[in-house]
Image (cartoon, rainbow, N blue to C red; front, side, top):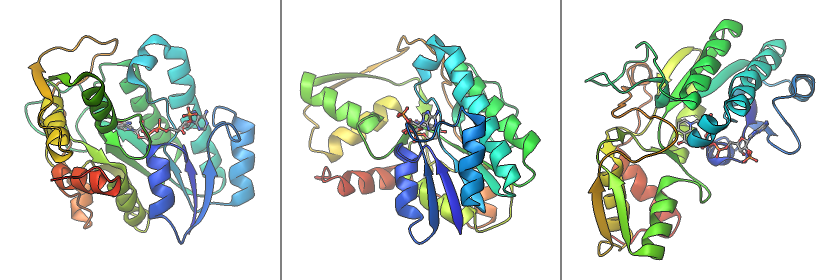
Length: 280
Ligand SMILES: NC(=O)c1ccc[n+]([C@@H]2O[C@H](COP(=O)([O-])OP(=O)(O)OC[C@H]3O[C@@H](n4cnc5c(N)ncnc54)[C@H](OP(=O)(O)O)[C@@H]3O)[C@@H](O)[C@H]2O)c1
């Protein structure tokens, strides 16, 4: 297939380059390609003629979005509109990567794909508006929600935990923020399967199961031989953005077509092993 990937240098984009080997890929990222520029985005997609566009580029710094909403709307909504228009003109199917932060986390049960959205933050609102833009413009669209993504590079939770553990020998992590870690390699592989099927709609594809930030950090420390690091459980980490307290994404639609995600602990082990960090 001919597949265009936006945000190709990011965590998910990098994993997609590995998972989609064998396909013909157009990689779109800064500084060469800026999706906030409509004409340039149309020109680069038209020149390639993709069958599928996987749109992973976004402003992902959640607190940064709170501090600069205009930049967040520009990239996450306007940029998404541009990619959707360009995909439409090529008659390409569109895959929009979204987030559990479209929910407020107040539901006592896991969220279905069709549950009402009620984001708490600027980031969540921009991603939800991105979903709506894609749904309005593209008839052949997959909206894929993931959560707590980690993959290549230093800007993710496991790498931050390891860095702070080594620098300080002591960590504080919240117990009142619960979600589903998502290994970028796993979701990239799932996306490779999904785009083979014309089953358009909304999907929830994080790794299965949930944990608190505290439990996730404890697992990372244990698996990398850092159980001696002091880990203190706290509540209410003060930050610019409000985030959902408990957002478990139920994978109903993916499972119906044979796309399931392994448990988050297994995925974490695979990530740590792939990075030479797994000791037990
Ligand atoms: N990270 C998470 O925890 C998480 C959770 C749920 C959902 N998601 C969603 O998953 C997707 C992938 O996330 P990720 O963590 O892989 O993101 P990421 O690592 O931040 O990568 C995003 C990429 O997009 C690029 N980009 C930024 N502005 C651009 C522009 N104007 N034109 C073209 N490219 C641009 C970034 O470049 P620069 O680095 O130079 O800015 C970066 O290479 C996003 O849609 C995100 O909303 C992420």
